[in-house]
Length: 161
Image 1: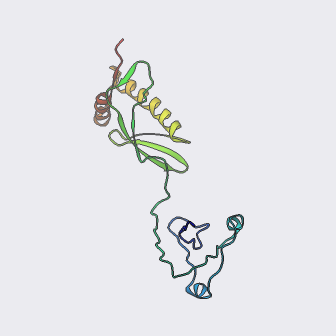
Image 2: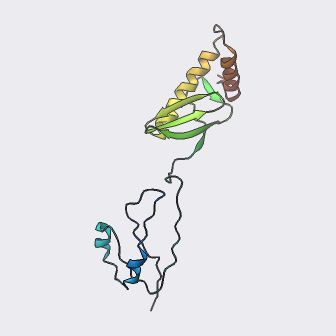
Image 3: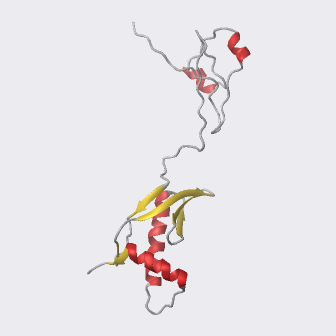
């Protein structure tokens, strides 16, 4: 005969991040109760659990909702046929007003999209256009844009034919 031990579920449905609801001590004192079948558990607000001893409950509060999206990426997908990357560009990833935003702190450049892929595509176009605009010999640049041009030239160069 095999024995299995499972952790009790105590009012865990429909909780917002950082909030935990516990069964009051008075409810625990009423005595053992049997948990309903799995089909009923999906529909119920609370799941009664039979305790043979007082359970140890550990509650961990999350500072933010877990996500599969990284907080930063190394961009190396420059697709312009006349340009190539010398080294990957470090980008910070955030979500603002429902859009994914990529920020390059060294140049104060950013791009956004409905998802990470769209934001990366937008960044590729933005940084390519900026490279050509700032490296145009007929354009005079101020101090800030000259700094951006120097940083761009550290990361991007013309492709050799």
